[in-house]
Image 1 (cartoon, rainbow, N blue to C red):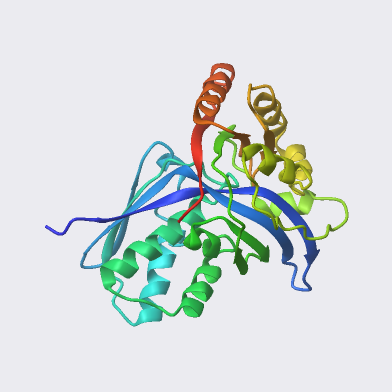
Image 2 (cartoon, rainbow, N blue to C red):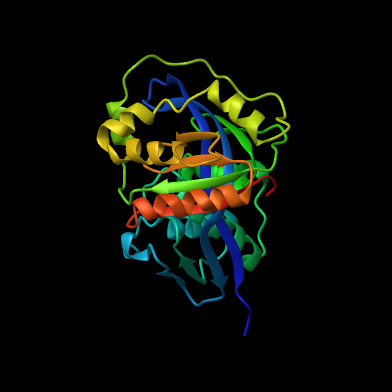
Length: 290
C-alpha cells in the first residue's frame, strides 16, 4: 500500500498588519509581516478513484466538510484542472486549529493540499501559475504556500522574503469564537496608514518586539468591538511573565504573545488555560524556515 504523503499546515501569524488603502473594487490593501507557528493542521494524500476528503481532529466538528465550497476540495480540483490531470485522490485533514480565527487555518490547509497533490500527481505548475491558482482560493493561500517569514502586501498577492528573524516563541490564544473577515473590515473605522516593512534583522526576540511595537494591527479595535473576549485575551497575555508583546493576528479572534524562550511560553500558556480552561491556547516556536 502506498504510504500517504503528509504535509503540515502551520498556523499563520500576522506580527503586524497595516491597512494601507482600498481599491475601487472594494479590496483593501495591506502591509504585513507574516510568520508561521509550529502548530497546525495536517493534510495527507493517497491515490483514489475519485476526489474525497475526510476530516478528523479536535476542531473538526467546526468545519462543514459536506459543502462543495470546502477550500481543500476546491484547491484539489483547481490544481487538477490547471495541470490537465484527473482529480483522483483521497485527502485526510487532521484539524487542530480553530476555525475563522485569523491564523489562516483554511488557507494553510489549502496550501498543504496543493503541496501534497503536486507530489502525488507528479505535477509542477510554473511558479506564476501556482501563485495565481493559490490567490484564486483566497488572499492568504499564497503566503501559506510559501510557508516562511514573508512581507505580504497588496491584497495578499505581493510577497517578498522577510529579513532574517531571531529564534522566538509564540503563545496563541483563541476564545473559540469565530470572526468573519468581512465583518471586521465593515466595523473598521479610521484612516489608512503607510506601509512600514521591517527592513532590519533583529538580533533577538526583544529587538523584534521593539520593532513590532512601532507597528500595529489596524483591525484589532474593530475585532474587539465585535468580540470583547479578544481584549481579555490580550490582557491575559500581557500579564504573563516574559511576554515581550501581545497582539491580535490577522482579522480573527486569535491573539499571540511573543516570548524569548520556550519555558516562558509554555508557562504563559499554562497560566492562561488555568484562567480560561475552555479556550484554545498553545505555545509553539516561531518557524524561521519553510
